[in-house]
Amino acid sequence: MNYKETLNWMFAQLPMYQREGKAAFKKDLTNILAFSEELNYPEKKFRSIHVGGTNGKGSTSHMLASILQEAGYKVGLYTSPHLKSFTERIRIDGKEIPKRKVSSFINQQKDFLEKQKLSFFEMTVGLAFDYFASENVDIAIVEVGLGGRLDSTNIITPEISVITNIGLDHTQFLGEMLPEIAFEKAGIIKNKIPVIIGEEQKEVKEVFIIKAKDEKASVYFASNNREVYQTDLLGDYQKNNSKTAVVAIRQLQEFQVSEENIKNGLLNVVKNTNLKGRWQILQDKPKVICDTAHNKEGLSIVLNQLKKEQFKKLHIVLGLVSEKKLEEILPMFPKDASYYFCKPNIPRGLSEVVLQEKAEEFNLFGEKYSSVKKALKSALLNANQQDIIYVGGSTFVVAEII
Image (cartoon, rainbow, N blue to C red; front, side):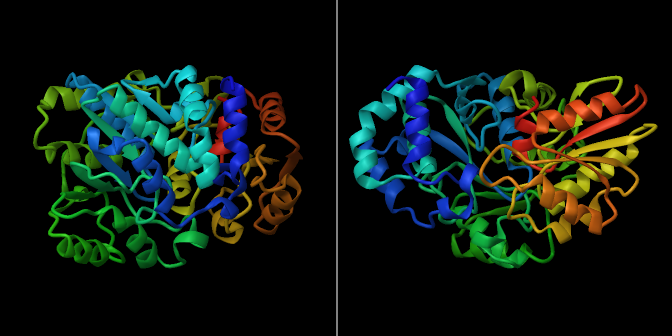
């Protein structure tokens, strides 16, 4: 199979969470453990940092990678989902895995993958770990896919575990209450491995302290760190993520990282790792901002930041996935904006018709569009140079316009 055929085959094997949602979620490590054995345990051949949490785990992972790259290390970075290209998920020193490596790996492993019935995510984790091992990375930053305890990435024994924060997302898998979700996320805390918690939240603090105590793991709350670091990532929420990254780096015992490396790493995240979609300004006059925030906590920070912007009129291109609780998310949006409702182009995408109808119940008014691009095009036609256009609501909305 060539690269395109390989991806189509991977997407078709089992439902893919990114596209299909709940049907694709597998709460079990059996398959990834079998795949690891088949690959001769690649995850044991490199050091790692494991990054979980509800919001900010992607940005924090990129910050950690950037800092370690500045310190001269060869750094693997595994994140999900991708925005434009599958190869974004697996990088070394900011460079995406070559397409030919994806094809050759899947072709070699195809019989096993079919026999074992691995999910898209499981085979991608195996590919990433095998690639990092074969390329002899000094360290890999591994972002949790969903949850933690039973996530396919949770077969690594990292140098440090990081949990950014806990919010209400993916409740259909992880639980409806914050402590339930925290229990799943805390599953990445390992025996005698230090854990950094990004935000000290009273509802879940005890969950982490108890789990860390059971595992004899030191626990550090990054929000207690009073230092402020500048970063090239523009979202207000990056202040918390940069603190988390710095506290984690300082607990990394066997790596030499200077204050200068930390400073430069945080200032060059986009250049070093090619991160996209986090409070990204796509153009000026009118200013177009996109952000991948997609749950209550993430959107709260982004919408507050939007209020601080100077504009004559605000235009919001909004699309969501179908499992979101609209009655929790829609009241957060400003009523005086013009809305352009659209459906992200994935099976999980919420119909623009349903979104428009539901939004009107919360006094959010606008037109509906069959695609994100059509919605943005209309917003650009309607906006003048002093206006702002915000594009968001879902990672998949942003993916279609960057």
